[in-house]
Amino acid sequence: MKVNLLKHFFKSSSFLLFMFFMTCCVTIQSTYVFANENPIKLSISGGTAGGAWSAVTEGIAEVLRKKLPAGSTVSTTTGTDATNPLRINKGVSDFAIGVSSTVLSASKGEKPFKKICPNIRAITSLFDEPFQFVILKKTGITSFEDIKVKHFPLKHSPNKNGSFMEILCEAMFKLYGYDYQEIRKWKGNIYYNSYSQSINLLRGGTLYSLSGCSPVPTTKFMELSSTHDITILPLSDEIINSLNNKYRTTKTIIPSSAYKFLDTDIKTVASRNIFMCRADLDESVVYNIVKAIHENINYLETVHIAMKDLNPKFMSDTGGVQLHPGAKKYYREIGAID
Image (tube, rainbow, N blue to C red; front, side, top):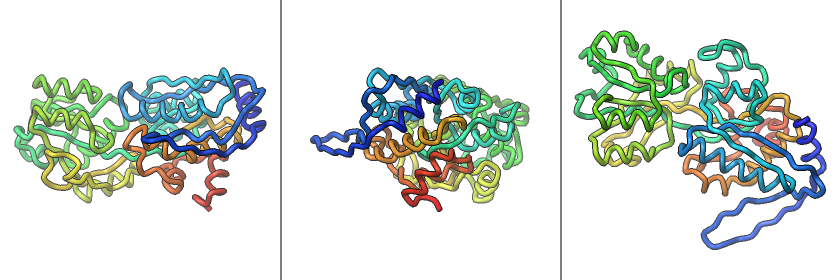
């Protein structure tokens, strides 16, 4: 019923292009006017409240609210990169934000998923997030090799268990020649906590380090550096290439200018965040939603700094996740893909 309503909603819309300017304000372009239409309900799964995912999800929701018939609603809920693909696959949510590598794993039924999730398609890429391994300088650890050589009793939080960030961290450790079990043998420990929880634990002395993927600069790290001497460990080219081959991450550089506590550029990998939908959504529905996002890039750039590089070519490169036919149609029309 929901899909039929959505299809009717988009197909019966009429076109209206307008633009106006206000001092110090970027407005949402409303390229469609919908009259005499029934209200529509859409649901979007985002991220943890207060994070980049949450902000971007709300921004996209606001774009869509401007296009729906009177009385329509676009609801957003919190989520994680491990749960959002499941919500899409089961039809609990219409749209969701996620990590391309995790969505690929869901589509194949690979860790952390137990079954294949066939009802997921990509709409657009949103932004990349570099992997950042933050550690206290007082540990004396300046490289990942140091941890193994010194049998260092690392007390680390790789983020929530089963999240892409945690899976990436574990894989990285193994590539350097050790794992969680060995860290525990060295009298260290692994804690599965969110950024906010991890930072509190680090401040309290429980943790020496934490890691995850987040936009640069990450405000929480800037705030942490005001009270603690910290740094970010770089990855070697060999490890970067191995991770990219396995998880379709990309090589990136965190410039020293990004944080006052850095004195050199940091080589690392970046995960790709995408906007996904149910595969069974009508082509015209997805076509118009991609169009809406593309036409409101200027507005979305004001929602979060991570969206500053959004462009058609980037949008259409969803990290290997299959595009929905409606998205393909739009990207072909604007010349983003062949």
